[in-house]
Amino acid sequence: MDLEQLARYLQRDVRELAHLANRGYIPGRKVGGQWRFSRAEINQWVEKQMHAFTEEQLATLEGRPGGDEPEHIIGTLMPRECIAVPLQARTKASVLQELVATAEKSWQVYDPEAILEALKQREEMASTALESGVALPHPHRPLPNAVGETVVAYGRSLGGIPFGGPRGILTDIFFLVCAKDDRSHLRTLARLSRMLLRPTMLDELRSADTPEETFEVLVAAEREILGH
Image (cartoon, rainbow, N blue to C red; front, side, top):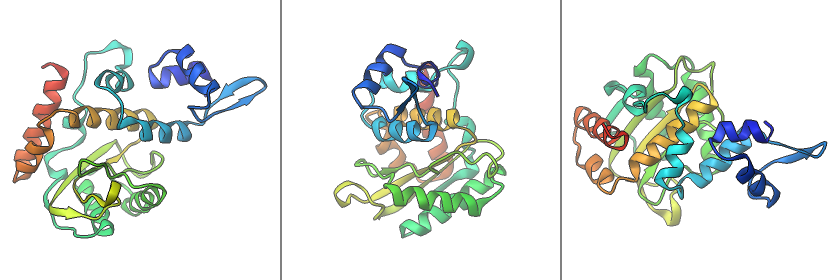
């Protein structure tokens, strides 16, 4: 991508991005005196920065194609069948396996083995676990041949699991994101991050004892941030 394409992709100002690139804050390289950016490298950079984004920055990253009204992303991409509460897994490897199996219930997963391998490779690069006890496992790159449409699966274990969190913090809440394309990948991660900014979000999720209760918590949280 060139600078203008990057600005459209990230929904940010060209001059701001040029300034960041010139100072070495954005991964890119100059070809013939012009900036060029790898989509995969940009996605990885955004993922690393996203935990520190403000509500406004996350909303901007989501964007709204064609200026449409804000849409429900999580409530649409994660059917009740893709919620595992409680999650039975007790190790990092078994968490990933169970999440993929849960995502298969959407009927959008065509190649679960490819997804599982991509998740393992992504976690080897760096854990997706956060200080909050939440992890957002996802493939490093979208897998358009492995899914029909972007799918999100959720699981919560009754006890914390070692998942590579900062300072050894255990993880009990997991959102699997398997996107069909780059834009859906970023928009879904941004929407989840916005929802997790709500002060009561994690308490509400940890208090939800069934998939049905969990789904209602997630739908209500998304409705709230959209102002519905």
